[in-house]
Every structure is written in C-alpha cells, then in structure tokens.
Length: 84
Length: 148
Image (tube, each protein chain N blue to C red):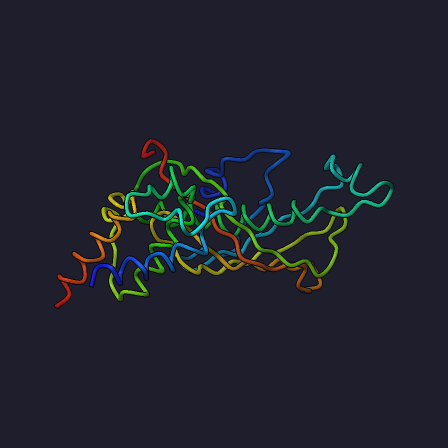
C-alpha cells in the first residue's frame, strides 16, 4: 500500500534531515535538496537505504528523477510492480 | 592505469598535496605514502614551539590518498574521460598517535561503496613503525569534469 511506503520512506529520510528541519516538514511534494536541505551525498545514502528497505535496485536515471518525496514513491512503486 | 598518472590528475599542488607515491591501486582500495616535510607552515603554529601534524591534515592526507586517488582510478575505469571533480562530503576519524615533522606515513583505504557518484571508504594511516595513527570513514562526491 502506497501510504505504508510513505511512512516507511519518512523513517528512512529522518536520520538524514539537518537539525533545522523537522520530520513534520516531510510532505509528498517536498523537494529533497531545495526544501528538506538534504545534500547530494546524503541523498545517495537515502537511496541506498531505500534499496535495502524495499529490496529493489535503483539506477542512475532513477536518482536523477528523484527530486521530491513523491518522485521517490513513484519510483519505489514502479520498481516493486516490476519485481513480480 | 599508471599510478603516477593518478597523482598527476589530483586537483592539488604544493603546499596542499599530501601524496608522494602510490604503492597499490585496485577497484577495492589504495595504498599510498607521504612524508610530512618539516617546512610545512602549519608546524609554526601547531603547536607553539611543539610541532605536531594537525589531525585535519592527517584527515586530508587520508582523503587525498584513500578517497581521491581511488576515485580517479574508479572513474577512469568507468569512462575514459579526463579529470575528476571532487567534493568531500563527510568524515569520521579517530586519532591514536601523533605524527611529528619529517615522519613518513602510509595510508590504506578500503572501498565501502561507490554508487551514484558517491565514494565511501574506510581509511587507515600508519607510521614508519607500522603503528596505527588514525582511522575512520570518509566519503565524497566524484564527478567527471564537464559532466556537471
């Protein structure tokens, strides 16, 4: 269920948020770099954690498309659908 | 790829080049050597009349050998393009022993991962007596020049 994925993704993002951004600021439309102030190095770690949590493999083009939380959810859902 | 060619491609020069020689490079890690010349200006102030190599400089030495030299090798392996652009993104280091002016150190790195242009490594720095001086984890973003 996508809403579960959203909660799961929030948990993954949480440790990478800078001190001045709270978890409640993570919205579906949040831009990782511009709004959540996550740097590109930490975004890579989020992607690696997403791979582990959902047991999927992401490619460079997925990373490029992953600008916002909803982009990430769309990619996760597409990868999970492609798995079965 | 020639080890000296990797050093030539480093984006550093004196007095901020902390790599003299590479002894081993493969896709999983690097071993390199550097001698801390007594002429470095930081010894004048770190510390007052007691020169010791600053921890940040040891970290830099580990990063240049362990992270950047390895990164240049890995990028070269992927694409035959010239020059890497590097940005240091994180460091977690522990320091166990001092390094005095004139000492030669050996840095060994082990790749943890290189994905989505981020290289993360374990690094170990040893003195001439083969004692562990410092160790830690370093990460950086590496991109090909002209590739953004």
